[in-house]
Image (cartoon, helix red, strand yellow):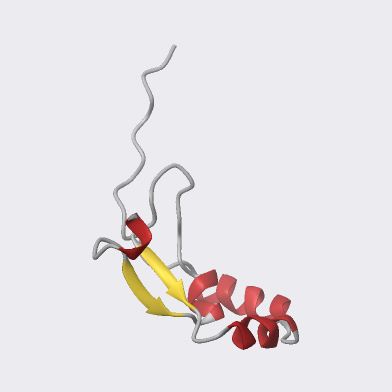
Length: 75
């Protein structure tokens, strides 16, 4: 299973970092955020998520850890 292999980089979950991390839906992710507990997820639901989104937008995305997508040659 890819997610448990050494291939992806595990990183402790930080909502702001997660919001600033680019991803592609057509590849396996090179980075996985790890929750320390399910309680952290429930705590996040009580936070001002839109303020985090705005802060993330101001800071911008991190550099991607994956190659750019190439154009498909499908007809």
